[in-house]
Image (cartoon, rainbow, N blue to C red):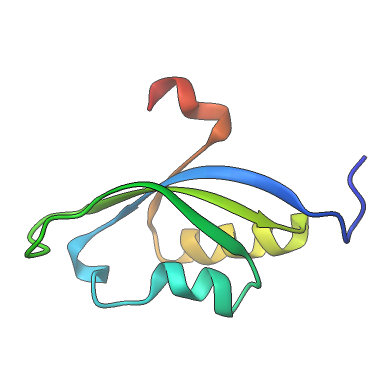
Length: 88
């Protein structure tokens, strides 16, 4: 069982549509939700024509990560979590 203050890691893949390229989506995961975010991999065109894809390692409490995922869902971003990594 994980305590409320214990840090956990969660890996997600996130698609950022071009409409969000000027929004600090990943930065907000740190500043608003207190997560440590490591960008493990990314694909983003130099002139930001298409969508961006980010593999992110998130570290925080379960509540912080759940709140951050809820925020990403509110933006209607595509998210795959580490339970779906076989399809990456």
